[in-house]
Length: 188
Image (cartoon, rainbow, N blue to C red; front, top):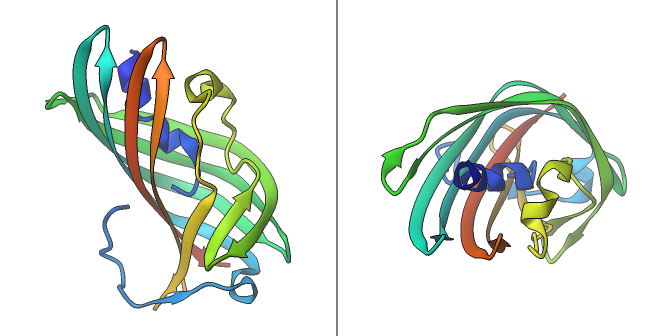
C-alpha cells in the first residue's frame, strides 16, 4: 500500500532521525573533540505527520517509529564518520484516524560513511547515512536537510535530533511530511 509506505518514509530518510524529551533536559553542545570516537546506538525514535491527496481523496496520517535490538555503531574521526551494524524498527500509526497494523523492519549490514563538519553550531553530514536506493523514486525532487542538532546529555550520551518538512509528488499526488527524530548513542 503506497500510503502506508509513505507514512513510514521519514523513518527511512535518515538514520539520524523523538519528539519526546523525557531524557535529561541538561545538555551540552557537541564540538569536534567531544564527538571523536565510537558510539553505540541505544535509542531511536521518529514521529511523523503526513497529509496529502491520493486520487483526489484527502488523507492525514501519523506514525511513531522506535528502534530495538541495536548492534549499530557510529564512529567519528577528525573529518569523517562511519555508521555500521544492524537494528530493528517498529512502526505504529494511524491513517485518517484508523490504526494501521504494526510494521517491523530490520536494518542489517548497514555500512555508510561520509564527511561531516560543524556549521553555526549544527552538525552537517555530507553523504548518505543510510542506503536510500529502495525509495529513490518516491524521494525524487525532495530536499533533505543535512543539518542535525547534536548535544551531550548529563549522562555523556550523544543526542542527535532533527526536525523537518518534506514535500514530494508521488504519481501526480502531492504529499507533505513533517518529522521529528531523535537518536541517542553511548560512547564505547
